[in-house]
Image (cartoon, rainbow, N blue to C red; front, top):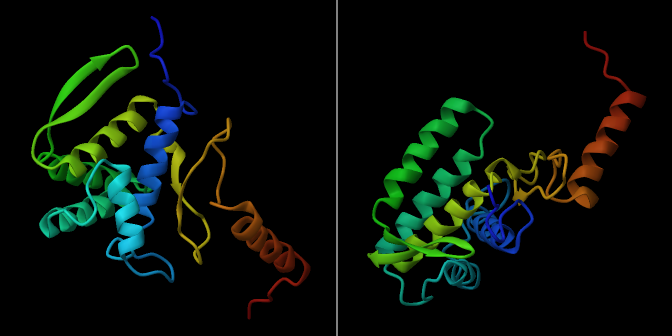
Length: 186
């Protein structure tokens, strides 16, 4: 079997799709940050990434995108039953994105047949990441103070933090201090 052009976890197409999904998921309220999809500079960037037109997107579609974003964030969960429910929600929400498949030498591309271009763009990104067997590389930072989504591009798929310099360093310093000064339980 000949691999598809541009397939794989580090192909430009997969990386671009993953970056868009990470940006979308990171607009959700998490840790100390509120919902940033409604902020013009953030929301417009996310909308553009998926082929939507900032300022011309129907508010009902934006509400649907926010619901889809939350379902995608839940799909990143390590809890199998939560992830299964989340994927069911993703499928339900993307039903409104009526698309046609266009076959190219680089693979299958989804184009909107009818409905909203933004939802079709998100559907394409999800398909690209899943087809590249890279969904498991999308993760949420292990730091409770952060909880940002990120794409693990390591070969070993072992990245735990979105940034080793901040979140990873904090976790390692806290673990080191705990080893030096163990708490005595009464």
